[in-house]
Length: 390
Image 1 (cartoon, rainbow, N blue to C red):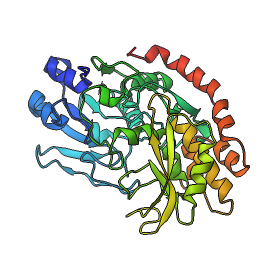
Image 2 (cartoon, helix red, strand yellow):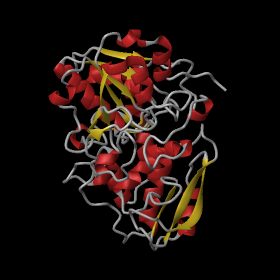
Image 3 (cartoon, rainbow, N blue to C red):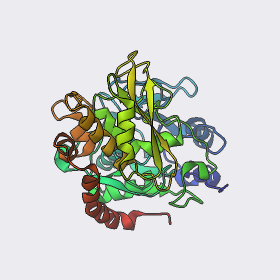
Image 4 (cartoon, rainbow, N blue to C red):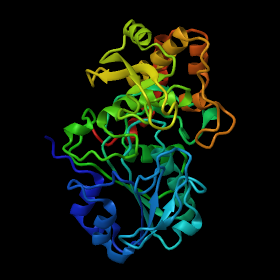
């Protein structure tokens, strides 16, 4: 097992010299833990004492207690430390000048899962912008991309910017949050004092369970590494009327809806060239969210070869085949979704209209995914100078 150390672990080993004298704010969530499972809040308070002044939480909260996408948790004082906690998901997604007042440095310690739609990277971007405007330093405690360095999908069309995509990165971006921070600073042309405390011992091809690091749910519906592996494709289901498995014990791996024929869907998916997976017919009843309490038919996506598995290709094919076997189904979810009240959720998730139009026209999902390869190559070349790990 590899001896990987996260940015938090490295900072704690160095001691307080990196943050010497600074008054600190910390942006964190439940997965902001060190190698011994201890959370960043008490660890940094031990390191910094009363120089740790304020805490921030992204979507789902500092404690991860908020289930739904559009429920805002209110600010409060952390009962253990007595520090004020500000929500960066709700009324304020960007830190205000008042929130940053009295701080010298914002420390960011968030576990990402490697997908464009996962909102923590966009909370990071808004923090970078706010700190640049306020003259505050940002220190990112880097963490591994749990699903490795592969890239997949398209680049976001800027006219479809939303809180599930604010910059033109791929659906599966293949970078760490620290690498994206330096790329985003350049992309947004920010005059910002930014430091990334790098991971020690991580290689880009490593998945999370090869690091020896604890897996802690970074959000309520990200219970396992397999969830993260399917998520760059499966999150597209949030833009549909299909259940993406929320309210089951296998969110994003299970997909379906009332009246859907599970055997027909599994048979059609088996005809595609979808490496590293098996779609098994299932029946299920979600306990909450879409189709709660209703009997649904669908499939469970089983990842059989993690290196070969292509989540975007798999779930694009899945949505296309649902349309093929049930053309009369109202497939597309209506707004609002993630603060967008006009554009269809599927379009902001997919970063444009191509995917929806292909599905509605009965097109070839594999051909669409193949067409995205050129833009992926361009992004990879642009990102290359910001990569920190082999």
